[in-house]
Image (cartoon, rainbow, N blue to C red; front, side, top):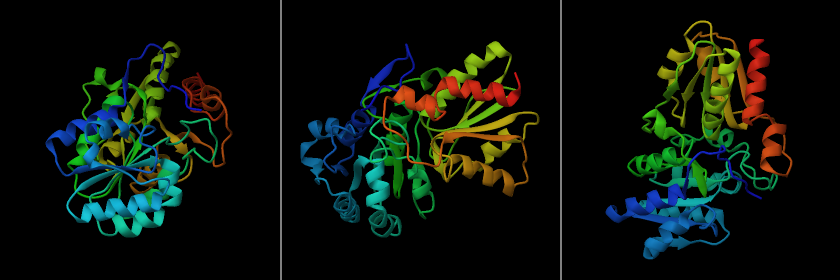
Length: 319
């Protein structure tokens, strides 16, 4: 049960990761693709159709998937290993840690269904994947916002030496960042919108939501800035601190992840260490196993829909 996350009327792009990787592979012979029986559901089937001799179907065996990717990286290839985020983070953690991250191998782990992007329930909802991976040394963590972010991030991580974990929105993915003259850079946050009352610090699909919320809040004369943080690790400390130091703004971190261990706690810890103390709130998923159901209903229930973002900001600002 997977529903569209595109706002009404917003253009979408089909399988941006698969198409971006296939294009890159035309000029980079070392790129190979692997999956754990989920090529169609991670958009890797697009790569497989164009480069069948560089595609490896590992079956429903995530630990084997990661071990094979590590072996290919040792031989000089750049493997992109795809599965669902729950399976990479929960089932294959030790293999990623010991075989890939400790050795700083050039493996790109690209995983679909991050956070609450499926209604199938806890077996498929990767609500704690960032918390699981943040403590792993040497691992870069990327949480793109939309199709444009995914395409640019795929190119960037292909050229980055070392292991990467990237969350993936797949299928028909909204394209919203083209109006912001956006360019993805590993480790860099990007200010998409200025505002004087609220500073949203967001990642992943929540950047789409807070941009919508910021527009809606204008009717209440609430001026909102949006700082998009696609790289969770390493965090762009400089830009986050500079934005948070602007006096008088409520700082709200919004993420499609549990309230524990993700972007919100990363930002809170950074601000505390540096002695920056704005009013601070989090919009995130609760620390619990979530229900199954229709995504719009679940997003409302757990507070990450645009409607709920707007409601909370009105409540917190008293407007």
